[in-house]
Length: 279
Length: 268
Image 1 (tube, rainbow over the protein chains, first blue to last red):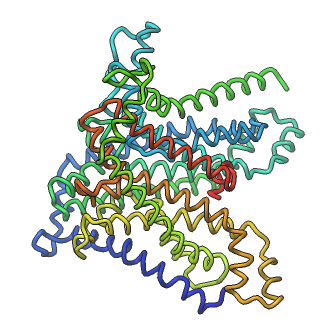
Image 2: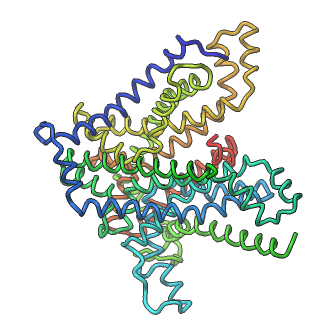
């Protein structure tokens, strides 16, 4: 069925108007406001404040550093699990159950998941209890309310994205390529590194991008699991809007976060493209 | 199979099942502690009681928040379907100029920081005079969930044989008739799956809602968020556990409609 131009415009009209009105224009307001004073005069003072204060640089750096750790951790956990589900599980039922296990957390609020880790990582939490019971440590480790708990919590929250994006790419890789490599004498390990893994890279890239961008902007998990002792950029943004009521400065911070994230994603994609081209 | 390969396989299997435990553990802990008879969080739970569930179900403010979240998610989902399905249809069945730009426009809420979307909506809502109202929450949620509907609908439209539509039209059916009699029944599972995704994304959202809430207008995730930062007790575990049950029901529904494997990896 082909849809004529006239119908196409008629069908698109209202949805586009809606997204313009409640998505594009609001972003425009943020962008404009970031260049204005409270009184409405044009200014660069908010950006000067962000750039000139070492504190904001440190928070931004920490935000990106933690996101990088989270991306790496989700890859280390997610890739093997995705590979196992797609390549090794023969039974449809078990495969479905495994997908249910991966998707159910995704459908549970970040707060509830962070709460679960609060219970697990507390001084009298299960993790410390087990470590003490096995004699691995003498006194409880301060796992909660710091960078460690933020990374652990965010990794848990982002891991399903990695598993699912990698699995969807692995699923579509032609298995006869494996067979061909094996027939030509390659071992299982060589076949994986030389054939399967390179072919699955688009899934790894897509998964890392999703995990990284979502981690950079995550708000709920860091604020619960930092116990307010560690600020990431999104928490600063929320403070400006929710407590300090300096919308203009909050807007500038939002723009800085957005632009820096986009630049890093761009750099990553370019580096990847370079790497793939034969030297 | 060589010996090294068998060892590799065993390690992979062991690792995968540890990962499965890791995915389950935080949820199991919450469900477990919600039944404890102690006044503090305890896992494994001591005894078994439903008192914490009774306590939150007896608190009108929780019921109000749950009702608000359900109304918000339902109305936003219906709207997102009405707006998103036509977009998906046009994008996959016609050559409009700027199709890539239109796709990017509708899908960008997936990757833009939700906290920035929330902030932008508060700022905008303040300008047009609807700050901290149901309308502000509603518009934000529709924008946030439209991509899920569009993505799953496009995926289902790409899956079936277009000659069915052509046959209907050759036999004299008009465009709208073809859509109603052929296309819609075939893409219905995809639309339902997209709606389930959309519903749950709205149901669990904090980042966009939190900017536009007031004490009497507070979706359940925001209420939980405010509570958890100051106080944790088994009642909050019971409320959290209830949201896990909702997630599980939606996952099972997805499995029924199009199969969880397809829903999870092809996004319908």
